[in-house]
Image (tube, rainbow, N blue to C red):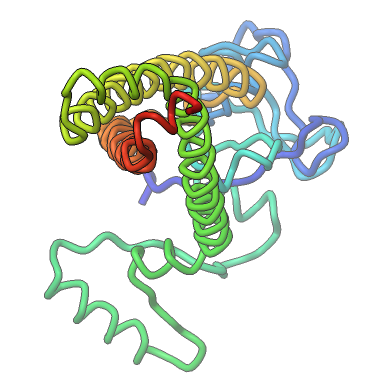
Length: 286
């Protein structure tokens, strides 16, 4: 079990937190066995640590009996939305070191076991749950669902905002097209008096509205991609993470373009049908 690692949460400040770590001068002779530690890459950057540095870890700051360890690895922050708001550092130490640091003895609050398949997972869950009173095993998928309820609420809220935005934009688009086509009533009247059928006028207006909607959606996609990259660049730098805060997926682009063209065609057809039903002389104001 010497390669078993456990995760310990470090305080934001080394002297004020539960784990004190400081760089010390390299001694001419080191102990026969020097343990290793994996530090958060943000901690290494903030404190000027690098691979191979010797640090001391203890449960209390400035502990004379602190254990010397060597920084053997740097941990990048996971792209996990649940960890963005948590600014504490993290480290990975050996299990026996963790037990000494937190004085928790041979007890654990929770542990993870990797199974080899669905059948092995089911039998493993049964064995753990029947081992003793108080034990409860959960599949990782169920834990993810239970711990992501906040994000599910946010997702539903964003979906509601999206639906409201689509409905409002459709009404706004219809009003704009009604006004624009109404301004061309003299042109429509001239076409009608020249013998152009109402269906031809409607088709031309619908085609024009669809092209305008498509061009507008393309411009919106380009604008969205630029804004998404700016948002990711800023917040990834602030939180020092690789998490993508905004995404412009191909599915979103296709859906937005199709919806925009569809709304443009419907609004153009409604506005054109409203105009061609009016007699040509009335359109000319006579």
